[in-house]
Image (cartoon, rainbow over all chains, first blue to last red; front, side, top):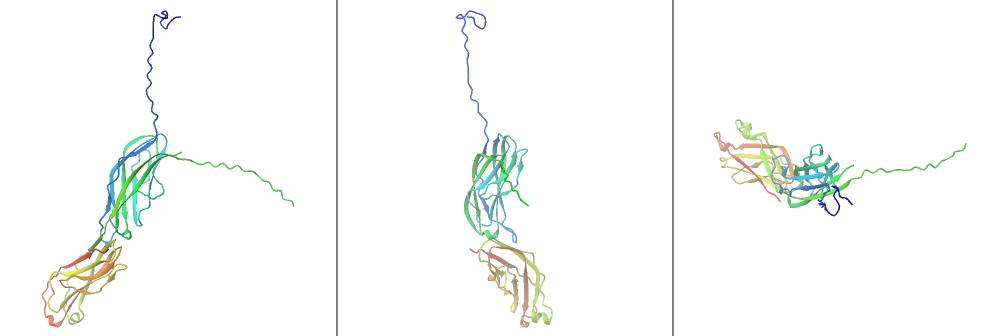
Length: 151
Length: 159
């Protein structure tokens, strides 16, 4: 029996070190940086409706392994005359839907997101109210953002 | 004539484009709408001058200014008062047209004590509502030199 180098077996020992490194399969995922500040409407110009308020202090990041979209919906309806809009900064190549009025039905905020990883994309929350909404005490709604792979 | 009917089997293939939710995140949006009551006036009226017997009898008015209002509350009201009392037998009135659903008290004589001008302002936003100032004098007032008064309007929170 002969070894690889032609030496006689038994005189040469070959050690093969095999190191298995974990291979992580990239998965589609979305994260948001946190909750917006409280949106409080407290002013108006006489003759006009209450002034809307905004929050632009949060961002989102996502990894898409296929063409995807982002949808959002509320856990329960807002009071009559009060609307919450959300606008997501679209990743490059994607289509932003602008400021979308949220409801308990999922609304598309960004579509045609190309596969890839994107981070630090802006989220704008906008609260509007009509005078008919009256005084609305401090309340909260949960906004669920969902990354959806689209065909 | 005979009709022959064929039963044609049709295979319907429903091609449904499917989507897959792959990741969901939540954020809590906290919101509040506070009580708001705002009013604004377009400017000062012209000078109110009584210079004839007819004007002495009927008074003079100015309706060249307007007011705007926004309130998201119920039963908001507007009051008016002047900074100094008027001369004896001279009366300054103001009549604010009320927004929809509210009640105007018509031409109200102004004094240094706030008087209700419009009441029942409820969840409304309107602009261009007429403000009518009136000046009346009795003959006993005599000749009154040109003077001014500051009218302070106050919109009071409802419920």
